[in-house]
Image (cartoon, rainbow, N blue to C red; front, side, top):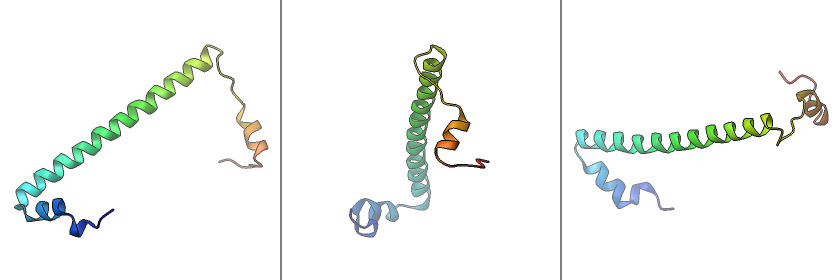
Length: 77
């Protein structure tokens, strides 16, 4: 990966007036937020899928005490 300081896109962005740099920053941040929302939606979907599998008997659960004992965790909190 090239250094940002030698990247022409970075150089062009820095040459913009402050108002345009702020607008560019806002657009870039929004693009990250939408990515985070997609990830959040995917995680939420997985939570619902797993919960349904447990409720339908398609997945087994293991009591926390068994998991802690298996890994030698004596005080989990």
